[in-house]
Image 1: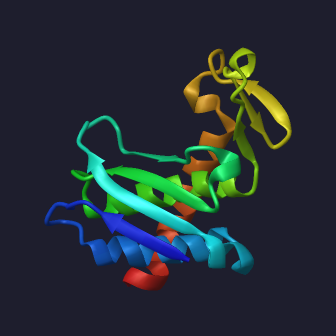
Image 2: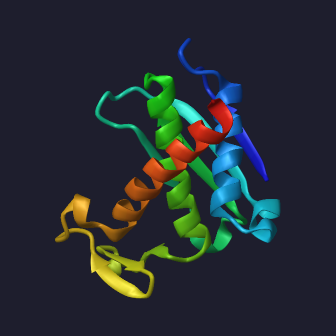
Length: 151
């Protein structure tokens, strides 16, 4: 597994801290075979105060286990680590095919979530099942990480 942290964090956050946390979260989220292939690039490039982060890939069939995460570089250290956990949950959803964005023009409003089709244009954001999972696991992973590693 390779995780690269790109960009300049603020003085509150160290790249090494993010890399350590990212590796720890990935070990909790992915099986060993997937971990060997996984490559995650984390860019500290968002500056919108209302936007914490985003995980994405260009094309699911061409991803080759390569994913990108953008994080708000102005978040404090704990919020940035928690956001990294949240976005890595989304990477897990992509890797294991739980979340699939349909690309056909007549189906672009649909997300295939664990075999069920959800219209993301008519479903409120906080009711997206992928966000519910990511928010829940973010909290669990964050607290486990700080209990095991940071204390």
